[in-house]
Length: 490
Image 1 (cartoon, helix red, strand yellow):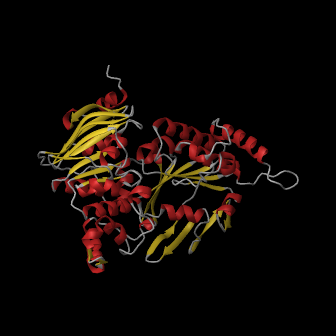
Image 2: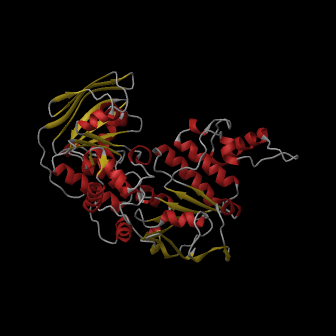
């Protein structure tokens, strides 16, 4: 891709960006959210048409007229938001009616046989090809997407944040598939915020910032500090802001949280101005516990107190009214209304505050949204911009602004930095520190151990729906947390 430019109303997403890809290499592409990575890949895949520049394949300038045209030219993309049809089965997701018999009629039997063969051959997965996609895990859905791309004989494959929702074992399986594609001469562009993956997977790396190429390097010639500095345009010696908190009395406490055989949590508490980290493996019951406390899911039993007052919380509205707010791990489905504007998202949890005699006070709502955009450094052309057009980090800050518009006493951050870049992570961490300084009690659920260790005053470790340990910061390290998370204490 040579000197690619692309603009949208009010935004120059790509500004003369260039990148090259060799056969049989993994070329990592990194940059902050909003750097232009998604626009670049959508341009390569034909979703967007460039305003300037050219795409060259095997030395020949090539126009890509859309995703189908891209696939026909050997370009495949495995997007972070998987493009699957959940109610169709595996075979139909791979072929979508492309396999026909000699009479030109779709051959369903042959499609299922071929899908099963390709799944085993491409990704080593043996699953009945008539299984609906909605019944598969995210990891297995991703395997179907990879099979679909490789079945087209693609020579260029883009992986967009492929490990963001995978376990360690699933990541290991994915890397084996990528190495196998490399051996076949497939060129791979690998987009990731997880810098720790790059030594394992990357041959070369290109850093993007503000729609431009900052630098392309052999990975062996660089390091994380240089990459981060190039991404954000400044030195970040420590991603976790240094902060000394003043911690007060217990604000939130919960006892005897039970949900069938899934949950049996005896006690949790968090103090004024404290950040309580919630650690544990996937499926340990961390999110389930907090959702039950918040009233989003039913519990057989729970006893909740905020500032000494007892609550039941039969639904989230009751929790929110009491000053207990929850920022979900899935911001694109539960946290933000992506099709609405920044202003509408920030005000939606506090409509009564901006209403008088049943009518919306537009000027007051706009002023509030502008104040939080400035306060939280939300990067948006205007408060009228739809949230779907913002980067992940800015979407997260809009959600925080929504809840800060209310008076919060306890805030739950569930995977607060999943899928956002290093610079945006630093800003989210700084915001969390500011909130704790205001006396808000914070509960942070995270699968990122460095994040848990870098931000938490105490760490509650979960295993099988139970709290196995509560550790002070001075007693917490990765090894100790993992021992309690796995139950391997000897």
